[in-house]
Length: 75
Image (tube, rainbow, N blue to C red; front, side, top):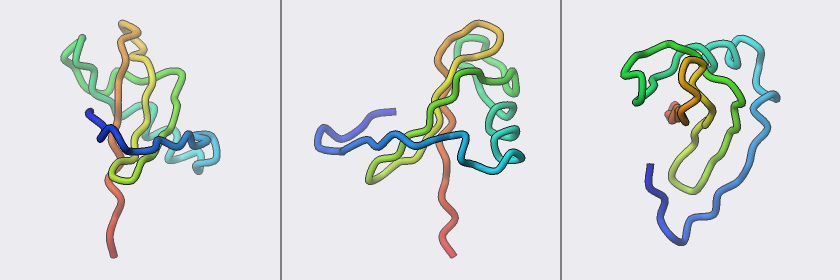
């Protein structure tokens, strides 16, 4: 995931999310190193910028960085 040089990244508190959302984000993952889905994530950190919103953590199996990009619903 590439950020524009001028984008400001804001740290958010992942644990302010409802518990069911936390569970989903921590379990529904993709690891590029393991090349498998739904292995789980530890140490989640949530970020947003002007153009993106994502959660970054570590794969439960290999500890590689995993990123879940959040798509905001536009209603």
